[in-house]
Amino acid sequence: MTSIKTTTRAALLALLLCGVAAPVLAQTQARGTTPPIPAILTTPEAHDIHSYAQPRVARVTHVDLDLTADFAGQKMTGTAALDIAAAPDAKEVVLDSKGLVIKAITDDKGAALPWTLGKADPNLGAPLTVTLNGAKRIVISYDSAPGGAALQWLTPAQTAGKAKPYLFSQGEAILNRTWIPTQDSPGIRQTWTARIVAPEGLKAVMSAEMLTPDGEPVAGGGRAYRFKMDKPVASYLIAIAIGDIAFTPLGQRTGVYTEPSVMKKTAYELVDVEKMVEAAESLYGPYAWGRYDLLVLPPSFPFGGMENPRLTFATPTIIAGDRSLVSLVAHELAHSWSGNLVNNATWSDFWLNEGFTDYFENRIMEKLYGKPRADMLADLGWSDLQAAIKDAGGLTGADTRLHLDLTGRDPDDGMTDIAYQKGATFLRTIEKAVGRERWDAYLKDYFARHAFQSQTTAGFVADLRANLIKGDPKLEAEIGIDKWVYEVGLPDNAVHVHSAAFPAVDALAAAYAKGGPAPAAKWTAWSTPERTRFVSSLPRALSAERLATLDKAFGLSAQGNSEIRFVWLELAVANRYEPAVPSLEAFLTDQGRRKFVAPLFKDLMAQGDWGQPIAKRIYAKTRPLYHAVTRQTVDGIVK
Image: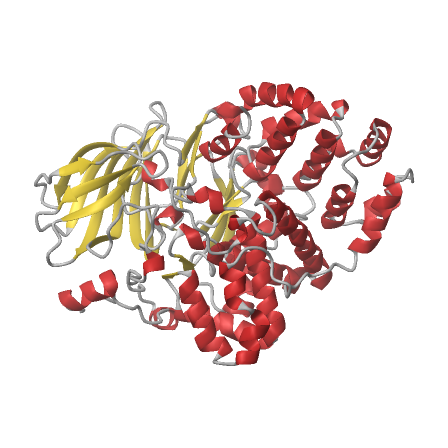
């Protein structure tokens, strides 16, 4: 890479293995150069317990993938060539692997290198240890893990077009080790390239610069697609999809990929994406990744969105027909700063990604759509936070901390609304204490100084004190930083954004619960957050007659807006409302977004002799349709 070619070997190793990286964003953009591979953080809290890697000894700096997608065998097969920066006395490099079928490992000249695969852990997989014998580049021939959790292979029937198969990946948190042999830790940033051979008639896209958008013919059939990510990223952000995929531009540097049969309505929904990028840049500095495109996936995608660089993966459940759910796009775009530009070094500090991003998302929505809409979204987030605190065991629950202890646990255990909503509330509390202008200036500078680097909670706290608090004891006491990040519960100074629109909505919900009429005229005028708030505010005990009136008035069981339908089905299940079961079954069958699927199955199981048979019957049918991320969660619910 341009920025490190002239660096001496000793200095390079100091930088890569244990040095302190310098600010790079401004220099990189001004010179048009590739940012340097950042240093490995060496503080104790930066040690990643969810990776076998020993990056202070030997670390991966770059990955070259050359893989063929075998749809019949449901595997990726080929090679991964890894550039290794090793300490002078390093004898081996340790990689992460979960179920990979390793065929051979050589150096870059083809000489075989000894390797061993250690004992497997159910969550972490097994360490793949390669003896270097002086090699600075190793080549691994392998197949992806059979049934590997990162990859979902869809039949044509599981797609919108119903004609061609589809493949997509989901790497966060530690799933990419099921299809890529590398150091699968968010604190070990890597650049990468890929050559992917897909069957003829299918298009491959990845979270990188697309060098051959139309592919190249391959002898024997298929087409090869080439990709390049020249900015160091966490390994979980390497993402792929292959299928019947078309593209529509949305702006100069934005566009959407999806299946041709749903492109028209998808592009309509996402028309404001270019404006979102401009709004985000006006807040926290230049967008650093070149293009910002979205891939709207088939409905089994387990998350609302995934912030893969240059190519956000998104669920089709955001396509409501009225552009009412585009806050999810604002969220994933915000990750281009918080999570991709500066990311959590370990999964114990997941809130550094999601808390920052949830806050940033709301600021984008406010800038584009006004404060009333942003306030409604923030107020709904506060309700989500209260529910998450309850689920975590109340205000004394250990998992209500921002900085989590995930020893012996799957990192997914920390991916709750605590990270998102408590994190965002913490940042709003800082904003209130210092003022928006000063807070924005700090954040913009923070992203620039730490660009393309990983961060820990302790690192952020130190930076906050050095560059914002600046020894002011009154401000330190007013914010209470350590209480926010290291202690349980919700501090008393938490900022609750109140929507001016919600009191009237809550009053109408209370009136309906007492026998009043369904507010049809209001419903027609309301936005999605107001409609969601109304249904969510109804008591969990309503008569069948009241539920039927509500459903008839608002068409809730046939609702195309996924957020509204979800809260309606929660209400219906709480009341054992039998007429809503067909809608419930269709909703759980037609999409696999974990945010919706897991709570509904949990609610059903809580309903004992009524709900458990329904849950088991539906899950027996839908389980094969869900991504492994969703299956893993629901397997622990439906027993």
